[in-house]
Image 1 (cartoon, rainbow, N blue to C red):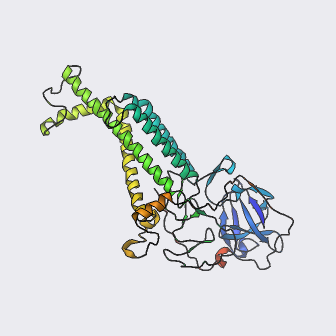
Image 2 (tube, one colour):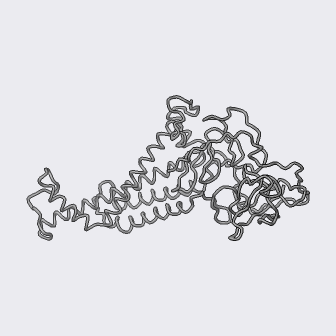
Image 3 (cartoon, rainbow, N blue to C red):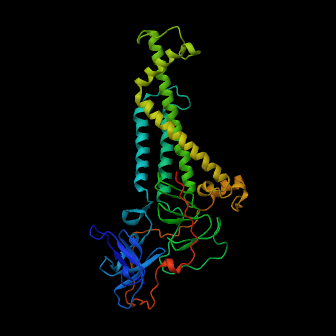
Length: 414
């Protein structure tokens, strides 16, 4: 087998894959390749001017050189990857399709912690509700470190990708249930029969084993291999946002108390010195509201930061509770959203009871990755063998694949 490289350029932004050699007038087009890539060739036609190439399950004939296909004598493994992933450090680090949002999440977390350390914590008094200032520093640093570590693990780890098979020939049908909600289903994009509970992620353009959902904030799919790290990330980040929200609330109440004490000592214009700090009936609400407004105006950064962390804490705690529920029931987000097991329509064979489900989710050995450990390696292949000549050109993978057993449901996202 040989490989050919297509290089997209402004003058040649895409390459057409045809059903038969000879161009669009000889059978039409099967698809368009819209990015630079290295594709495997399965042979040439009798004239040696056309090559049969595959992009996962999509195959077609492409003209040599005219539309940019040239023989790739060697290439980097990242060039042959058909997913929408982003590679760094020469292919040693692979991030999901939403890599920009992943870096935005990192920046949001780091900037928030720095604001908390430099602006809010120095203003806290020694009489904290739960922790001293020193303890607050250490707990916040610990939670932030765990959050960042789990975030990077989720983003850079293989979630359980099922590698695509670039071939014009449909793979053999596996044994077991075929089709249906919990059976093997054929993916025409990857040209594989994916196992039960797996799904093709439209964002990353790969099939993922035990697919849970695609999280844009992590930038990656959450699946069989990284779901436990995602759950720990939710726990640590939820605790961090709750802690910062409580600290902001404490600062606001302390400022309110200072405002009221300043009125009584004459340092601030009096409102009603005979009234208590907090209202006990409706007649005292106007004075309370004025004091509260004065406190808010004197600590705008605390109020804005606390409001933001309160919204984050509410969202994260809701998501954390949801994932705790589906772990207890041995389900995935994708299955929960689609109501796969609702009303007993399907039997969940992985449900072993709440305690064993948690043990399986958090403590079981992680499945081995099906991907190479390093995409930075160069691929060099033998050119001594002559290229295969197709006597009877296949039209496309769609024509040879027969009935398609693929689902088109939308990916659940965080």
